[in-house]
Image 1 (cartoon, helix red, strand yellow):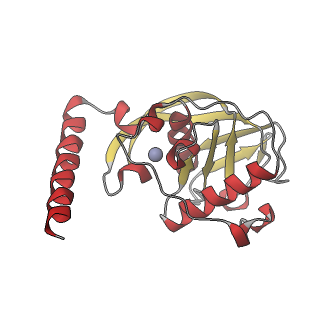
Image 2 (cartoon, helix red, strand yellow; image 1 turned 90 degrees about the vertical axis):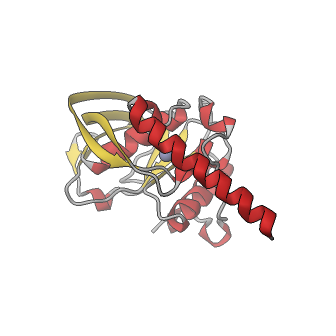
Length: 201
Ligand SMILES: [Zn+2]
């Protein structure tokens, strides 16, 4: 699946940064080259994302503020084009965001979103229907090359969610105060529980 990176045998599952960690608020630094260390980093990110059963992961979530994220969202209802050619979503995964430039169009619609940095919490987030992204990765040839990816559906939404991470934006930033307060309450309760747990062992 992601073996073409050539580093899957040595890929590591990395710890995922949690909400509240300042690195999640850092804007990513653009990648200046694509070399062996980039391949190794992407392999580790894929391994980490699959282990956590996510559909996307940004470098900030493994503690690296870079303009680098991965998406593996291959539902059949998504429309995906690569350099203007329509392609089945499962043929182009993973999509890799490298120094992405994104424009959006179409009406906004709501969908339940979650985040590997805030596991188990989902909230309805409104995002535009259509996305157009310039990235430095061609998901068909699987080479680091300037490519235009357009997407709708879950694939497009996952790309927008990950692109937000690269700018230090979290999905909770799109929510109403009421929605945010609900999440804050759950997070506080979890923290209290974990403290209780630590005290009892
Ligand atoms: Zn996220």
